[in-house]
Length: 210
Image (tube, rainbow, N blue to C red):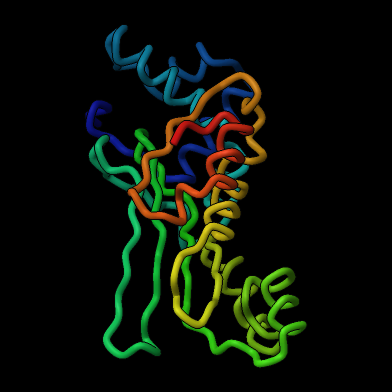
């Protein structure tokens, strides 16, 4: 096996994390990466530390049969992008994709077209409680989120807004254990909903550099 070009799946990452917890980092490197040079060994050690920091996400992916052996190749320059697709208006969707420098792909944010209720209180309830979906449809959307490790919103225009930008930041960065001491650089495009005063202020409060 050529470790330099090897990208392991979530199942293997989970196994490595468990071995580190039981036997320590040196023993883990000796067992799994004993053919590496000193420089490559140090690089792998740092990578394992990054896996440990994302244990919750890796365990979740490793436990799912559909993602346990998933692996990804991405160039370091690939960060985050929005993709809007459609033919007819009713088929339009907006997707927010994000990966980091290690090649880890993070949960997808998906925005679908939804008909808006004419009752103001119902609109407020769907936005606050069910991410823009009515009660009946939400019962189908929620299991899809859990099954596919993603977040799904709905609105009449499928237009990304500041509220969703805030939820995106909270979901990916708001609960990380090192947010008080470590800055994170997030590269996203020059879209107005990414740069409202509220979004920028919240990003600063959790040490996310936009």
